[in-house]
Length: 219
Image (cartoon, rainbow, N blue to C red; front, side, top):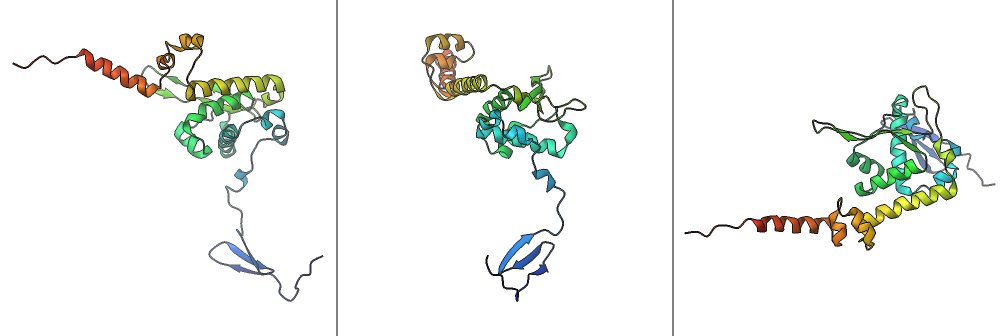
């Protein structure tokens, strides 16, 4: 057992709000009274969900996105089912690239932690409606939690998640070499059929449009 110097008791000094305690030659900083936001740091994700297979297989980007929605739910317990966030703010809060957000959200939905309550849409006046999400392990109004993460089977969840990940990775960062896939996506994304990037395809399209207009010779 280590020896403690009883001749030097701990002393407390209050300096501009936070209290510093000197114990055995070390200074420990802590606030005298807990702040109102201190209890919001504890997540609402239950222990059974954290120990589940679905959460263990959840990628890091999806966990960060889930933490952002979890903090929104901790601030307002009645907002479950109406959780939303713009992509720039969500990427900044979750510390995830904006291009990786769609994949992370799909993975949260695939593993049963998020549920889309209202898909995003564009109105006739060109106003964008944000997508609303709900945490499956939290109650929505008077309804009990659905706990969709409990129904995730190891084989099905892993297969579906890997398919989503590989498809998004292929469409975004690789050139499609499959002829059938190129034909099916040629109407939506024609640059995949030509095997070039989107920026290069649009640049060539602008050049083709400009080449149609020829200036008349000056007299």
